[in-house]
Length: 82
Ligand SMILES: [Zn+2]
Image 1 (cartoon, rainbow, N blue to C red):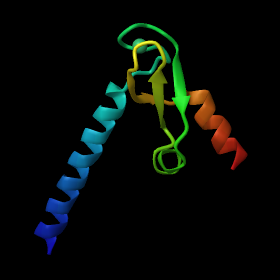
Image 2 (cartoon, protein in one colour; image 1 turned 180 degrees about the vertical axis):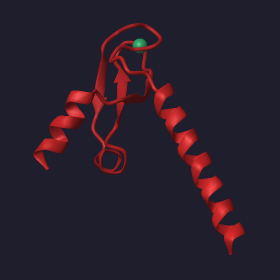
Image 3 (tube, protein in one colour; image 1 turned 90 degrees about the horizontal axis):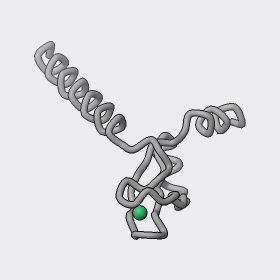
């Protein structure tokens, strides 16, 4: 039983490390990584519920779409409201 717990803990630790690394790789700025234009937020109720630390943004100039990190102030404002 101890072996199962240790193996599960290592798998969990690996998942946490990978998710942290992926989060840190997301762009933090609100400008397009391709053309530098300002990104427009796209609201997803499911994404906001599951991953409140990221948001989906879209570039109206070149069509780039992707996830970016939520700014700290917005996350803290939402936490303060609830
Ligand atoms: Zn762009």
